[in-house]
Structure formats: C-alpha cells, structure tokens
Amino acid sequence: MAQYELLLPKMGESVAEATIIKWLKQPGERIQLDDTLLEIATDKVDSEVPSPVEGILVKQLCKEDEVVQVGAVIAIIEIAGEAETTVPFVQDIEQPTLEAIAEKEPAALEVETETQSADRFYSPLVKNIAAQENISFDELASLEGSGADGRLTKDDLLLYIQNKQNHGGQAPSQTAVTPVQVQAPVAAAEQPVLPTPAKPVVTQSSSVSGGDEIIEMDRMRKLIAEHMVMSKHTAPHVTSFVEADVTNMVKWRDRVKKPFEKRENEKITFTPIFIEAVTKAIKDYPMINVTVNGTQITKKKDINIGMAAALPSGNLIVPVIKKADQLNLIGLTKAVNDLANRARISKLKPDETQNGTFTLTNVGSFGNVMGTPIINQPQVAILAVGAIKKKPAVLETEFGDVIAIRHMMFLSLSYDHRVVDGALGGSFVKRVAEYLENWDVDREI
Image (cartoon, rainbow, N blue to C red; front, side, top):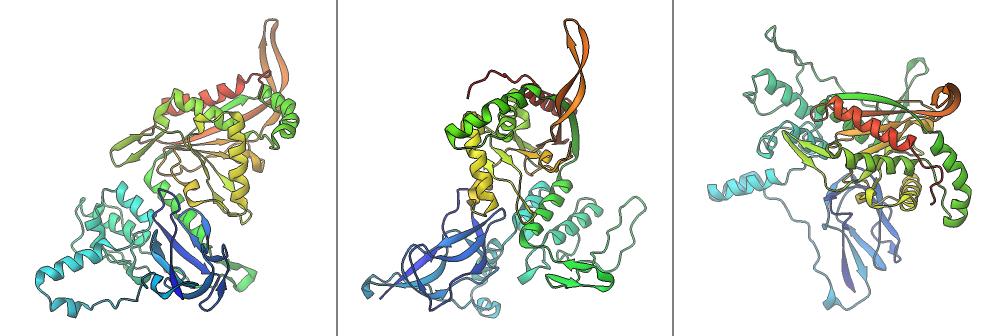
C-alpha cells in the first residue's frame, strides 16, 4: 500500500496560515473521495478540507487549535498502490534541548536560536499593531508572551507599548513584559499603567447568582472584538453625514426588479446600486482608496469593495468584491448575491474576505436610519447606508417651493483622520449621495 501526504491547501494568495478547528475523520477510518476531513479557520472565515483521494486515514499530523502554514503536511492517508510509490513519510522530529545545542560551537547555538525566534507565531492582530507602532520583529522576538506556549498576545504588546511610551519612547529595561499586578509610581505628567484585569475561567455557558449567564465568546467573535479594538486604537475616527433623496432610485428598482429576476434568475437589491455609486465616487476621490502603514500611504490601484454581512450566528463577516469598478450593475448584483448566500452557509473561500480597499455596511437592513461604523483596518474609510424612509421634503420647482413625500436616507462615512480630512471625507460621501439622487429612472438593465 502507498501513503499519501495531505497538504494544507492554498486558500488564496494573501492567506499563509490557518488554524485547525476540528478533525471530522479519525485515524483508522476509511475515507471516500471528497469526504470532509477537517475544518480549518483563517483570521476571517471557516473552511472545510476535502480528501483528494480514497483510502484510510493513518495519522493526523496537526492537533486541533494548532496554527499550520499553507503547504504543510497535515495528515497521512493510506491509498491503493505499490509500496515503491509511497510518498516519503513525515516522521515526528525530536527537538534538541538547549543543553544539547549548547554542546555545539557558539556560532551554531546563535544560528539555531535565531531560527527559533524567526519561526515564532504572531497573530495578524499583533502584526498589525506592531506595524502601526514601528516595532520590528527583532523587538517582538525579545518579548515574553502570556498566551498558550508563550505566544505574544495583544494585551502583552499593548502593555509593552504603554511602558515604552512612559519611558520616553525607549524600551523598558526589562524586555520580558508580563501583566503588572501593582501600579508603579509615575510622574504627574505621565499616564498610569493600569493593571491587567484577571480573566475569569468560565465554561462556554454557565449560570451565576441572580439568574445572570456568562457566555464565552466563540472564536469568530473574539477575532471581531480584537479587530474592532485594534481599529479604534490605530485610527482617530471621524464621521460625516449626508441625507439623500433617493426617490428616483427606489422607483427605478420597483419598475425593473420583477422582469430582472425573471430574466436573470437573480433578485436585485439596493446593495449593488450602492456599490456602483461608491466605485464611481472613489474614482472621483481616489485618496479614499488607500491604506496606511506608519507614515506611508499606499494608494490602491484596484477598487475592492467589502460588504459587511450578518451571519445567522450573530457574527459579522465582510466578503470582498474584487475590482468592483470593472463590473456592470448585472455583474455587481450577481456578485453580491453569490457572496451573501455563501457567507450565510459558511462556504466563503478565505481569499474572498481579503484585500478589501473600502467597506460598505447597510445598517438600514436592521431598520436603523444611520450609524457610525468602525473602520475595517487597514482601510481608511467605511460607509454606512441607513433605512430608506418616506418623509415630507421641500422641492424646488419652476413654480416655487413645494412639500412632497420623498424617499429619503442617511449616509454616514467614518474615516481615518490621520490621512482623511473633513473636506475629503465630506466631499466623498456627498458625491456618493449625488450619484444616488441623480439616478436615471429610464435606465435599462
């Protein structure tokens, strides 16, 4: 019998690693072609890994909750075939102790120690914070972590940054940063370092006195929470609001939605219309379509629009329409529907949530008239569209001003005030509103 090495598959150009969530097949089980072997998760989405062969699962080479690099061998499957064709088996390699390494020449010890530091895992959140604070990987490697297996957590890094600021921008004398238990005396002009609160140990759902219930965050909610806190920590948020008269747009959609669905077998919602207006406005104001890394601004060539989507679990995910400006309204409608449908059933590919350059969120779908969304880092702006409501409005006509019932909605743009000033942010959201207000009611699709 031959043995087949199952590799962690490539999940898009921007995805380099994934976490093993759950093994669905155990050693000794027979596997059919395309059977799901395990569930994995990137920093954005959950995915399934199917078997490319038939056979028997011999060994799992990765444990649940372990972070694995793309292309790494994760399992051995026994398949039919000659023994000579067996793929080389990946044996467990016993790691040498520091004492054993020390018996080598000093130069060899230095090389191996550096390799261990270079291979240390850092979460995407930690990497983002380090990049924003201009902290090198050498500096990260010198810090002790409080996470599992000594992993450097967000709290470890933020505490180190706070200590560094309190020392005038210099690294503290001790490189091992651990949560402080007692607040040290500080000068009056300095900000005190608050002690890290102890984390309660709770089960996923446990009752407490008084009828309250403690619910542990699931993995995705933890990622969302970290990403939102990081965004607020990174960017000074400013929000500008505009009210738009979208009566023509609403009447146009009412006219075309039935024949469009019959012809294309797709429902046309307002979301692709909003995205089209956003892409046009980005071309008018391209400095909204940028990212920031320290003091460097990267102006993006592609216009990749993320659309925030609520999941049945209550969590949030942001699939991305790549090169949205190159799609017509039919293409945008099909892309929106496809991504939204697959998001609800956890069938998005990891790369489909990566490389967004601007995000749209529809708070109107929950009946909200406006919102102040948090920027999806490393982008610099996010647009919220509110519910469309019928309201009395003043219209200017050739015969004078009149009051009429119109379809009105609010648009709110949150932007990073480090690089987007009020003039740019306000002008951009106003331009989006103008594209929606000036909608051609006779437009064919």
